[in-house]
Image 1 (cartoon, rainbow, N blue to C red):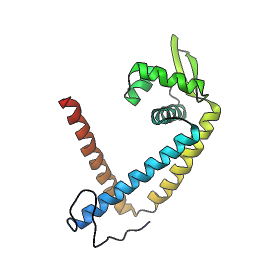
Image 2: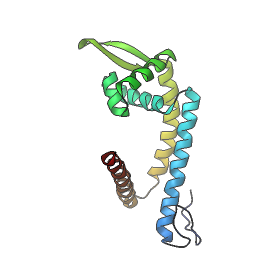
Image 3: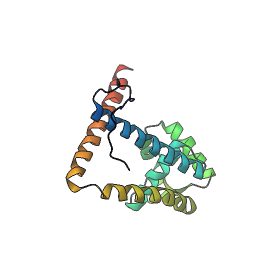
Image 4: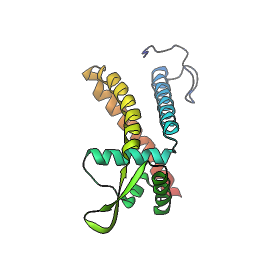
Amino acid sequence: MTTEVTDTTTGFWYGKGSRVDAVDVLNALRRYRSAESAAQRRAREALGIGENALLALRILLDAETTGRAVNSKELADRLEITPASTSALVDRLVRSGHVERHADPHDRRGVILTASGGSMRQVLQVIDELDTRTLEVAEHLPQSEMGVVVAFLEEMARVVDQDDDEDERSA
């Protein structure tokens, strides 16, 4: 990992030499997002699934580790997709052996979704390897800088989410 700031920073849609430090930060953030997207693509390819399917498996795995049950409605809400799309997604995941349906013990008409054992091990292995490596990098940050990084990333997320909110209002 390099922390060297270049003299001739260009890119990220800003002019050459303008706001060099800020442009370097944004370029590094863009490189990270690109690398993270590539890692997610590799995970999807290893499992033979799409983006929403990987997100769904992660939601199911997170729920299982915290002892929560997830049904199709909650999955649709979390993925921000329609119930029909969720149904099709779950059907594909069940057919491919990644997800299992179980009767809800609290609602005789309800169905709980879980990641299958084999799929769970595959996904956990891929996610754990990446999470372990990224945690190691984060742990090397000086404590005094962690708060700055968290505040910056939270503010960036707020700005991006705000753009999404504005797009929804104008639609």
